[in-house]
Length: 335
Ligand SMILES: [Zn+2]
Ligand SMILES: [Zn+2]
Image (tube, rainbow, N blue to C red; front, side, top):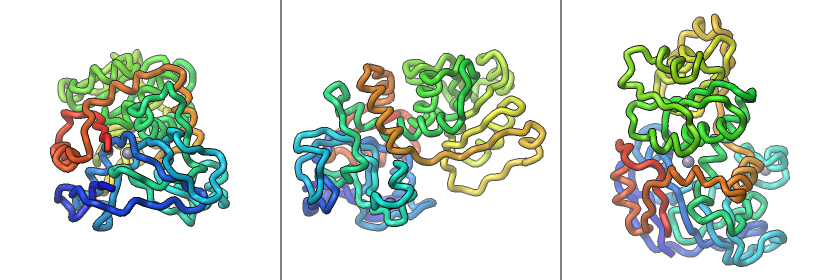
């Protein structure tokens, strides 16, 4: 099969012929239908921060059709379309049992979507009904990441919500906040480029940070007051300190930005406000299922994030063009 392989930091991925994976016990083989390119894919291949093993195949936002069953598979059948969680847990430990296999001590990180076929765990596949297109199926992973962040915020009905950062995770948080009871949702980014997408996903307001002399005043203007909850989805040093500045006293701040550089805050500023500060990384299997259910019920607004769909052969060049560019939002690969 063809796969896009990571050869060296800062170098384009290389399309190579690889052996087709064989599903082990409790696994199925899928023919990958769509895989989203994530900012973390760009970051982990850049040579900065978290190092990726050479000759790796990545791509964790994907869906596909089941084409072979490993031993012991009972629930899935050939021809099913599924969105898998992008790793395989043991199925026995507490983390696996509660639906959060990323916490499994025996995690198998074998799952990859920038290739034609992939082994995935049956237990952590969500079945896609016909109403959920392949494109929507590839959005389940980033949407579920945003959903888990919004769940951690325990939003009250009518809450004023600010999302800083208009990447896929920030937009997903805005989408879920609106669906799950927020009164007003404002997205803030450096420019107005993502404003139409944010609006399509349900944000009621948008703030272009670069255009505002007094950002806090602009936020309060758009939301009708200081935000009850801020979702930080920028991921750069300083973003958490800014969010502490924006949130109302005794408000909640959920960091989704995943900044891997040193950052500093003035704790006293958060203390005076008694800010509740949380970090969120990963979803539960139940978040995947809920996201699939919402898409199946006809809420296709998240599809507004998709700005391009390319072939596997086009991936290496497109991948490099996305570094340092925000012209595209979510690019999908159809291997
Ligand atoms: Zn991702
Ligand atoms: Zn486990």
